[in-house]
Amino acid sequence: MTFAALRARLPAPVWLDGAAGGRYSVMSAAPRGQLVSRHGRTRWLPGEGGDGDDLGTADPLALLHESLGPRVAASGPFAGGAIGYFSYELGRRLQGQTTRDAGMPEMAVGLYDWALVLDHQQHCAWLAGDPPADVADWLATGPAQAPGAWWPTGEPAATPDRAAYDRAFRRVRDYLHAGDCYQVNLARRLQAPFDGDPLGVYRDFRKAAGGPFAAYLELAGGPILSGSPERFLELRDGWVKTAPIKGTRARAVDPRADAARRDELLSSAKDRAENLMIVDLLRNDLGRACRTGSVSVPRLFALESFVTVHHMVSTVVGRLRADRVATDLLRDCLPGGSITGAPKYRAMEIIDELEGEPRGIYCGSIGYLGADGAMDTSIAIRTMTARDGMLDYRAGGGLVVDSECGAEFDETESKAAAFRRLLAVVG
Image (cartoon, rainbow, N blue to C red):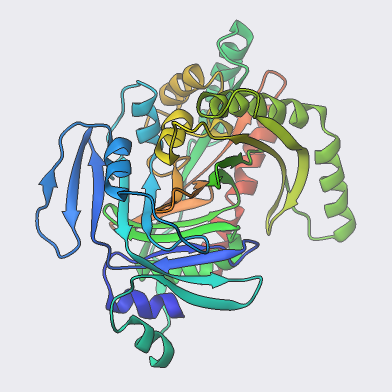
């Protein structure tokens, strides 16, 4: 594995892994430094090590934009810039809400001057930017390297259980009937103790759940492993695109049963209504940063199928205003509407009340902001952390007034199927 070899030689390795349905993968390591925000303060951690500099309480996205420097032309998807993550708690802070300590940074991004880019469509790869002097040589001649072994060391635990989920569901329904919200995303948490190499976990997880926006990051806060199927924000040549997922059915083994589930999802009035609510929310979010009249919906209620689930996906696009940049777009849209609910602010308050703990990376965002002004980010679903001997994964779904508790609970199980399968196969 090329990334395993890179990781063995250089610090702070990152892999934006588009092999499962994406066009490109991007790998890098050895950043100039990292911008790390926690508890409302941001630090610059230099790549060569040391305590770094306290940058105070300034807006972390403004600091990120400043760190990217003057815009430079680039060919391909990424030739240098920032790669990292933006947690759900950062989104809460940007929305003006109080945050809880998730035990990890609210933002961690490395500033990388180079990347190994893999084009899965053209079946080629190249080094972009300004890589370290010997990288090209050992990529070409170095021996292949495999991730280390790993193994579960105990049984997985899920919270809330069915009874507690039922209580939270009823509380959401009360809020919906009272008119507080139209939709609220409610999640469950799954944890499993493990030992061994987190990259080995990712190697197996990407087989079970790899989506077109998968990723493996080793930045401040510990390893993050993602199999995300969902694009959050793409910015390229001044055009913005977001592709919210709302509507899910578990895959069936029998092809005819699987086709029936796919068709049932596409014809479901409830799922279409949920999807449309989030499309409207994201049209509003994009409208804050895009030119008046430029926001449109070129694709509505489309089907995308993955290893364990079918999803209903829509696409919203717009033309970024001339006075806005990628970090402005992030600030306007974090966290993504597809994983909060509508209206977003009130839905986030209800989520915080009923889940009772921070989400961390779950429902945050992972991706890159290029030195050329481009950006591509995912919604951090089908995503876990691997630190302190524990794999931490979450799965949720949007609740509306006509949701049924049993069906919604089962949807969380469908979305957690890849995680459970990972543990079962290795265990």
